[in-house]
Image (cartoon, rainbow over all chains, first blue to last red; front, side):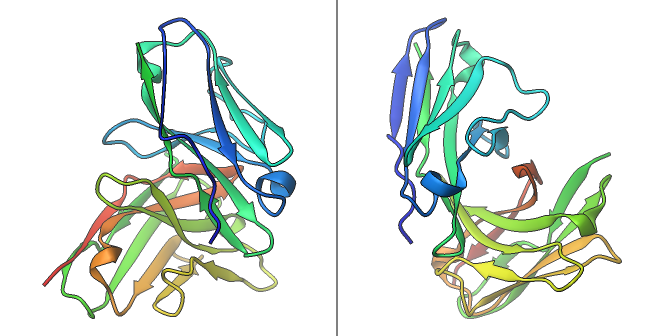
Length: 110
Length: 118
């Protein structure tokens, strides 16, 4: 399975903006959109956005997602200490008929 | 209360079988696709399987790593999702999450740990 590609780690200063990336292909991100999840150590993941730019109720407006071609983006503005977590992207692959996850990005808030 | 509660995990020897269950409550279980997603210790998320919600007939899809060994099923009358795991391998060791799909993976259980070791 091809999978999705995420940078292993990103660091950014408190109150600044971080942008995470997720690279797929035309069979997954490019045509099916991408979802983003946040996972704090010892807890199950939490959905932050789906179908590339939709935010579930209760998720802060500081989290916004977008897509350009085969790449998905998660932008987090006004970084807070509690944003320090692992972030995963996910997409359905319409050719392979599987869901795929990126390897995850560990976000450090400096 | 909207929740998913997994059970059935434990330690098992390679080659043996285990069946996981996931009890759903607080939502119309039969109307949603359901997934199993696993996470090996210290590793990332790995999708395992999905079962559809369709009343006209269900479909199931599997990750290549478990195809032919694992079977996902559901009992809508009991609001319960299952994962039958056969021919278990050490690399199947992970925390197994039950996940509801409405808008992507929108509701997760707390997981049940499976350890495959001799």
